[in-house]
Image 1 (tube, rainbow, N blue to C red):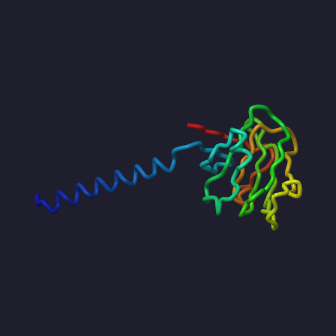
Image 2: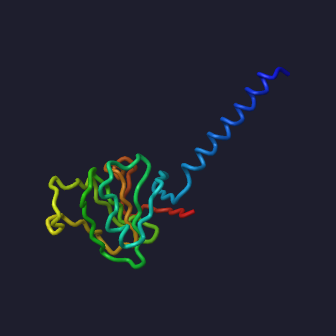
Image 3: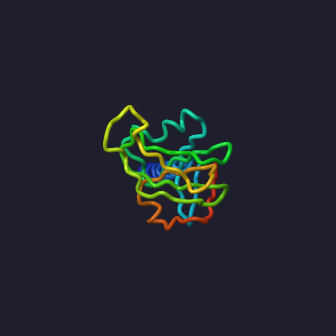
Length: 153
């Protein structure tokens, strides 16, 4: 065999390995699945993370979300403080969708007075809230009673 051919094969094998590694890295982290669609989620399970949420971010990638996990079910209120893009809220109780709130818009005023911001509540006590880019609830037909599969890895 010619040396150039062997180098080409080695490069091809290396490229295939790199593509596989990139695919593996993109799947690292918690995954949530509803109606056959999966989102990679960032988990907010500590009070400071939950208060900050997605505030001050410019955007959320297409198949990503933020999952708020609470130790006890409750009627947790959510706001859009310092948000820059609209969201859909998926309220989750156990392994089922308990409700949805669609197309929640960021506030059109910058205020340090959080008492002026609207609060959004679940229809019943929940232990998880999934925030997704606005339009995902409609696009994937998410509705009350849908099964939720969480893979924390």
